[in-house]
Amino acid sequence: ISQLRNIRVDGVGDYVEVIASDEQFGAVNSSSSSALLPTINIRSSGVDTKSYVNAPYSKVQYRGDGVDITDIIQAGNESSVLLSGVNQRVSIKADYLSSATLKGVDVNLLIEGNDYGQIKMSGVDCEVKVNGETGCNGNVDNSGVNNNCRATQDTVTVPTLACLSQSKVIKGSSSGDLST
Image 1 (cartoon, rainbow, N blue to C red):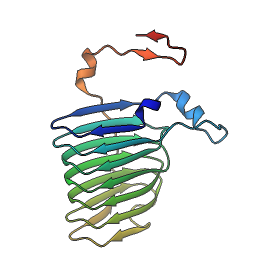
Image 2: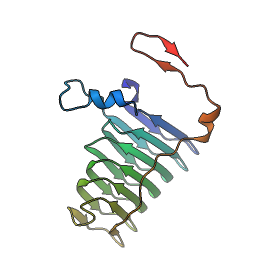
Image 3: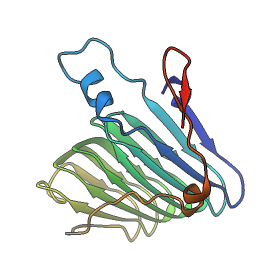
């Protein structure tokens, strides 16, 4: 998992899938454990890219400044999203999202979770949909143009890339043993 600290999606037409969903990670990140998983930093700055991230036990810091991106993320608590690109579609599921900042143009963000710290919208034609207890009644700052926040019942499901059905998955262990 330490290799997942920094992920860049900066090409044209790139597709990326990150899976860090083993239940053992939850035990590592529990409040009683002193060993925490590293934060996964994702920067999506490409054109016409898709990223699917399934990391429910890892804090994810997502930054999207690309064009025509579609990213779907399941993340751990205290994760954050910063969107400053054009024509972005991002969905994130986290029990608590610390912050969501939308500075781009034609940016759509779906948040599923119990609560969030802050939503800032300073972009143009941005929309945030929130499926959670707080809805849009929390700390929402809208200083942009033609932006909207609304409650929704939409949910976030992280798909898997179809190409993985034909891929061989190799699992490694801390002892260096490999298995398929």
